[in-house]
Amino acid sequence: MKPVVIRAGNFWDGISRKPHGPREVLVLGETIAEIGTTVSEPTGAEVIDLPGHTVTPGFIDCHVHLTLRPELLGSFWSYSPSYKALLGAEALRTLLMNGFTTLRDCGDMDLHGFTVRDLKLACERGIIPGSRLVCSGHMISSRGGHMNAMLSLAPDNHPWENCLADGPDEIRKVVRNEIKHGAEWVKYAASGGFSTAGDDPLQVTYTQEEMNALVAAARDFNRPVAAHVFGDEATRRPVQAGVRSVEHGSMASTETLRLMEEKGVYIVPTQIMATRPARLAEDDAWKYRDSLLDGAKNIALSTVNIAFGTDLGIFSYGTNGACEFSEMVTNGITPGRALRAATSVAAELLQRDDIGVLAPGRNADIIAMPANPFNDITATERVDFVMKAGTVTRRTGGSALQHAV
Ligand SMILES: [Zn+2]
Image (cartoon, rainbow, N blue to C red; front, side, top):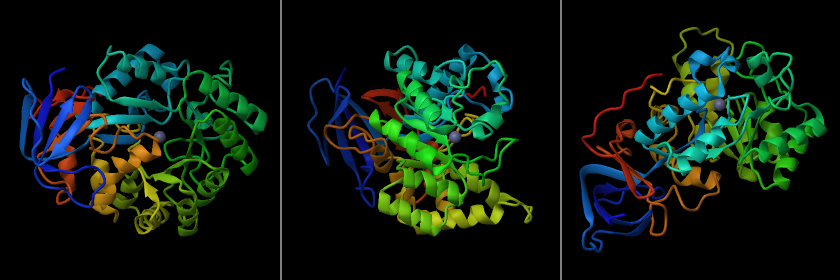
């Protein structure tokens, strides 16, 4: 690989309170070698000029579903693993081109196999283009809970293959089965949801004892746990059980958020999915509207660690997930906190010290946008330069992407 020197009109490292102004970045191989007002320029280096652009670390989306699409909701168990793999490949390419160089898949919706793990392998081996991928296997759920109701499983489907588990013994077995098949995180549903017919977001679908058993089984294999939650009680129990991240957490009280601060638990608020519909709802009588809006206010006022996530897959991949940034800012989160949520804080959540920050020795996951996102957060939706591990995958002036689904 040729050495690359990036000349950034403006530069932000993923941590600092503000961008640093013009900087140069020297990339050798897959890694950042040097950052400064000027850097050494090895002979034969390719120089990439990005005047008028802000250069930042590649974004990290900590909550996507590569094998899900809105039009599959309610019937997706009837689609084959190979079809879902093709959908996943398309999503990976789209997300990378939009500036998301790392993703955590938060629930494989291929219930016949482990397609997200296979997508990760295919990316790592260069078979398909795409972002770095962290997989959490399938979303473990109680019978009658979020995944069960959503799927209306055919009776001949084996519950363990589909991640339905009740009681500590079954839960341990399912956790270990997911890990056996490549889950780097363990994801489970601690509450019902909005997008499912048979359950309610305020229901708590596991006892404290069951959640403790799940987290302990994952911990023995050094796997962190992410819990899908909406209501306050459903948020508090997983936090007490020792999960690393709470997904959505949209109706958490200030007391529960304080407990999360104490325990260092991260929240991935996915506000385009949870808060935006409440904010735009015309119907005052919508049962959850006020508690969703109050929840968003509580998160903005808290000091809890926020990591960026969209829940893409519930939406079409034609939606640029970067619109989550402006939703967060509209809900009172500062632009700097929103941007750190998708860079340095997301990397912390994923326990990765090689991504999320631009510094010598880190992976050269580098993107650029044609404005300063601290002044105009929507600039994040106009990323037009993407480098992943030292390889340029999108150049300024390149054509816009077409989205099939
Ligand atoms: Zn989700």
